[in-house]
Picture 1: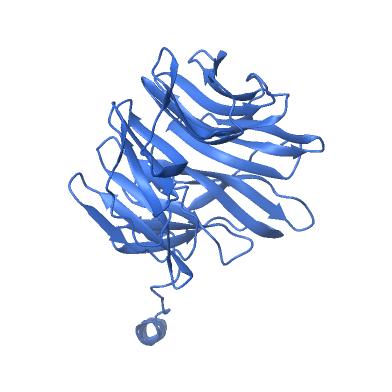
Picture 2 (picture 1 turned 60 degrees about the horizontal axis):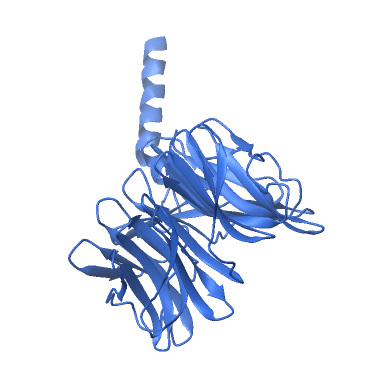
Length: 364
């Protein structure tokens, strides 16, 4: 009798499982790509607080899983002060050993040149490049002149560029490893918005002209128009150069006053343009992830969580960061690949307070 009762119970359970409806899924629902594979998603990383808030994040760059640097500035009562953080593979710590750490100013882009870390610094005396050796000693590479605005900085082995403006207009300062010079650009260029470099003889810049935005390329001899077929009525947010020779350009295109993001990829022969569903997201923080896809932080529709877009070919998926209690604005502002993981750095605003620093990681 007990055997018969057990058999009936098993049959009832089996039938219920067979007819139970599956939980519906939506292809538009943001799901962490790693979750489907059973891997961990984004996790929060503690960041030591800045001395003052609010804070502004400028850049994040990584050499590998055990070294990343984040820059920016904090808003003190008497003005802005430079801010530098280091990731050692385990935790974030604040670095206050660099020249000018206690003074006014801000830190900009981080670059790795050989065994050194180069950081652009704008201080009370003007712009300069801070260099940190593998042993941890800092030195300063002084610019040949002061500019009233420093727009961008790029460095690679054997070459560095600082673009900005002085009282006479546009300036492109070039360092060749031994000294500085001023480089000319095509006559139609009025303003250089950004610069990046793969090698000393292969640098790219995006600039404004009377006819719109254009892309320039340095070939070791001169800056030329790169003849990139940018979308009409568009601007450029960033250019991602990779050792393989691949290049990716992102920006915003305006159609009837409505902005939408575009993405252009160069495979060494042709440009291919797509419009991933990113809205009017500012896509400066573009990074090639360890999974081979492009990643960018986007504006989140959840006040208590960050949001990231993963772009691979024509497919774009989204994932959320961890939930943060009482958060009203979570903004990852920069991304970097650290070995097999992605690292983000930005700000989070908790209800009733000013924005403070935050960091998240995808992968181990």
